[in-house]
Image (cartoon, rainbow, N blue to C red; front, side, top):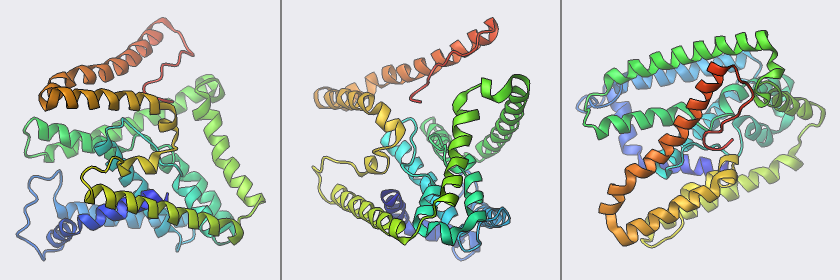
Length: 327
């Protein structure tokens, strides 16, 4: 998690002038800043951010989390979302996860004594939106904006309404369908990780920490390791931006031991080797020519998974698991 936080701090620092322009435009001190090419106005974005942060903090506090702890937890969660978006968009991985979920990082930073029983319970419920984050919404929006830019759309404001509408419809429909399936067929008879493994993991963690408190003898070494990870990440970022022939990219460190990378590292290496030989011996022209073929491989796998889901639905088959990507 130290590497993740270091990445976010680095991005915030390098974009400090742009962020100053954004807040200046939002609060009227920089009216000359042009935000017409953005998905929403800077004023609306800043106001929405502030209202959302305050609302999240009050909601978490009402659920039992100490008020002083909410800024740290929310900041950690947003750091994870932000870092994953950067890694997915720049690194080219289809999805990923952080190596440590925000709730666990919070508990192992402050210990169970400071977090308290109600705080632990509140953190348990945050798993629903802050732990299973291999495909964050921020990354999907980033891809949509890139696609619009690629086809020459310079006024993306209408896309915002479509994104909000799709998110609302998807959330409502998936929630209703999940409840209906669970009550009709029994959740334990459906996907075991979603209805059995994940709930047991979440509140097993809460119960374990209530019965086995964490003191400074456990938290301090972990804070030190997080600091070490941040230091190594800072060194990699410095080397990447200072030395032209530096071979290692820093984006891999925050997700190096996450489940998607642990399972899919060999496929990533094969893709990297193909790109290496194509660019080295065929140049950028061959790379751009052959790129649709590899995009087709990705689309083919997704289409295959979707097709078998449709076939199972039409034939009444259940229990067939077609993995798209990695588990």
